Image (cartoon, rainbow, N blue to C red):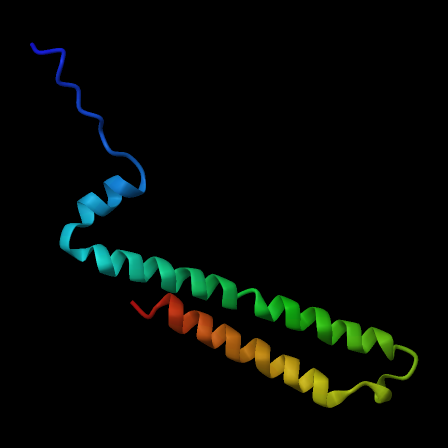
Length: 91
């Protein structure tokens, strides 16, 4: 046995990319798309905050609430959720 030859085994991401071989680009692409999907999934929570804030600001008289702002945030939430699903299942 030759103790002088000691090879360090790859671990983590470097090992994963080594296993992926020729499909390395697809692996990286799927990771990027997953990150974008995750970021888009936060938008409905932010939209809910702004909608509730608008309703609470006009709690005494809800008729004074800016319905355009509420609809705009609702549409943003819906579109971001659909976009998140598209990015999640895109690859």
